[in-house]
Image (cartoon, rainbow, N blue to C red; front, side):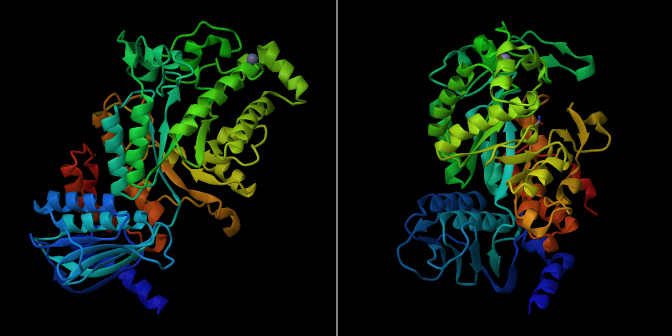
Length: 526
Ligand code: ACM
Ligand code: ZN
């Protein structure tokens, strides 16, 4: 039976059936077509279980956008209804069943998350139908990976709360569930911390910005910056939660911290003074690891962060932290001696482990870039593998959870066409859509048990070269949609050619949303 189903699922894309009728991205893991059609009209009503109030509103707006009809909510079941229901059965948390018959559409899940995902599938089906004939089918669907992430760097360039919400809307469309919000950097501190007002009075503003290519750059002299108030952050986190997206904040340490040091130079090894960086890159001045006030500072920052972000994981950065200042700092050297550490790598490990202890005691887990492996991984830390996959492989072998985000193909700040002559300036690299689509997050070299530590993967949007949200959209879309299929759909049901056709229908939704997505993929459709 399994064999027959498999043939059916593989054949469906090949026969082209999905191309015109089931343009769902990411493609569902189980889909059976049935006879007949459902039509939505002015009499169609919505019936929903308690606890699905947001999903009802969301469905109303989908139907309103598509048909210019606003269906009312009814209490009693009948024909011509769209039913949203929470089932008592033991479906997985993110799973859903979408059943379309001639009489009704039903979406069933054990949690509102699954109902929301069913709505996203329905929304995408609507974008691919002709007239008002929604083909009967039954979808039973659930994701392959738990961490379906997108990152956004709001420090190199600042994107306002409305833009961040738009980013979340795109993520929701593709059932991505983790937003990694990069909030602190050398070039700007973006989160209001009430205990340390200078972080945003001073740290959120730079006197100019590097312009042009790195090896041939100049500076403008325009004051640039911005930050999110705690009220704005609460609103964004709530907005994400409604869309079943967890926001994981990143507070960088010990490196990429120049904006904080510009505000509080006493947290450095040398005492400063410092300026919020105008140039991109890696800077030698980092938090002093020998000074206990640094930990008091970071723990106080975390106290406010934890109130704003209920996520299980807190990202503590950990990448690209030069050791030069630590080598020359009496306090840092003293710490190395007192703690019996071998070198500055172990000092970095001490730094991260000390923060991990603090956050673990508050019931949270840390995740950091793969440099946190150097000098010894903190006992409970998860690793985000960005310098290739080696860090992720090493961490999984040590039985630590991993999020894969290797530069190739997960850095969406890289170019998406081979010849970038006519592209807006980017940091470099080449990550075309088909390469993103072909990505397999579990490295072959891992055993099945080790592979289980791969929680998923993430697309990163570093914004050194993206001044506008339009440009962010251009870099993130449609690569985000390809990554969503990597993370949701079982590999045997993936098919790039079919994906491109579905994507073409899908752009109707992106157009409605006003997204400035890249259209290069259109020339790949034969
Ligand atoms: C990174 O790209 N520095 C994590
Ligand atoms: Zn020091």
